[in-house]
Image (cartoon, rainbow, N blue to C red; front, side, top):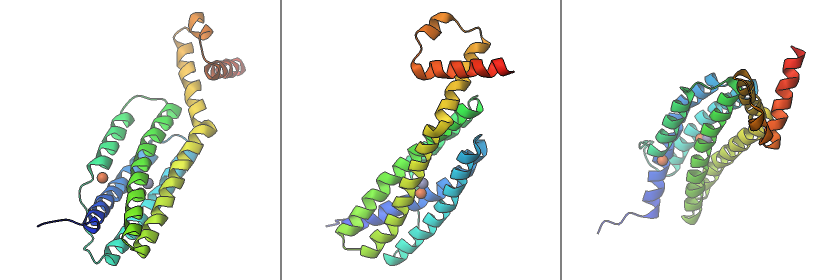
Length: 200
Ligand code: FE
Ligand code: FE
Ligand code: ZN
């Protein structure tokens, strides 16, 4: 009767995360390099440093569980990274690329938040208090990284991306009909790009 326990499942998930974090340490520099906003690049670089620390933290968890630090291919994060890589190859202007980088980064953060939320809960259920504590430190970092990306998007990157799109519309002879049916945010962007043109 081979019955795997919740502890076995926990070790499996930790192996998945160990591999996921290692994949992310390779993917994050690529995202950072493609960023046009200095703030976004700095946020991604800061999260890269955190991610390296998260790898070390998982090694501590293996030690606490008396298991060898071994990864198991995480297909989930590999898929997210692959999608992100495809987006980077597309021809987006700087601010739009930044918005796309945030979209990709947040997919990764949400995957991690889900996974760390699970392993924290399982460790607590198994009475593995120290394991739960170590994993909670990472969970909190992932949540903060996700929040930072949302804040950057809302603090100007999304707006800048909208303005960029309207500049392109201007370039190929914007038609009044389009403007007439535009949402307020886009009208604002059009007005701003018109103002910018007037200054030039
Ligand atoms: Fe992480
Ligand atoms: Fe996974
Ligand atoms: Zn992360």
